[in-house]
Image (cartoon, rainbow, N blue to C red; front, top):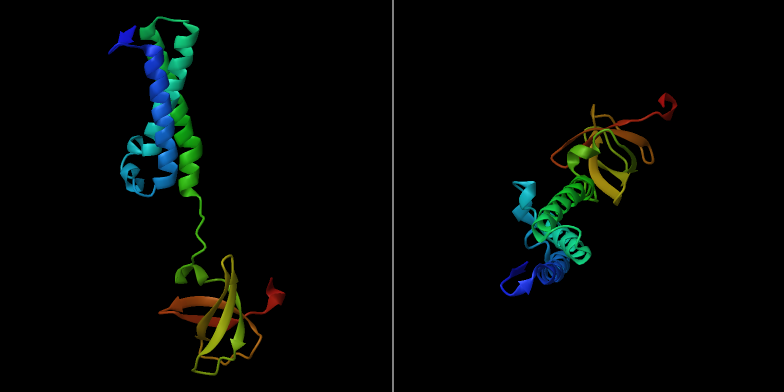
Length: 176
C-alpha cells in the first residue's frame, strides 16, 4: 500500500523519527506546553507523542514482518499504540504528577511538629523556635499558647500558626 508515492513502511519510519525528535524536544521545552494537558489527560502532549511513537514503531515492525495486510497492520498498530500509551499514562505519568517533590512548607503544615526554643519566650512576649524539616532548619517567631514563659533549649509542640507566629506549648518527652 502506498500513500503519496511512499510505502506504508517508509511513512511509519518517518513518523517514528519525527515523533522521537518531538519527544526529545518536549523533554527540553516541556514547561512551555505543560498546561495543555491539564483539562483532559488525552490532550497531554506526552500521551499524544507516546501514542504516535508507539503506533509508528509497531506499524513499522508489522509492515517489515508482513504478517497482515496493510489495513490490518494500521489497525493493529493503532491498538498497540493506544494500549501502551494508556499504560504509560496510568503507570508513569499519573504517579509522577502526584509525587510530592516540593521542599517548600506551608504555615499550616508546621502545626503539630516539634521545635526547640533558641530565643527564650517571655510571658506575653515573643521568642524564637527552630524546627527541623526535610528542607532544612526553619527559625520562626513564637509565643506561648497560654502566654506562658518558655526557657531556652526547651522542646515545644507547635499548637497553631497565625500570621507567621507559632503558638507553642512545652513538650514533655515522657508522654511519647
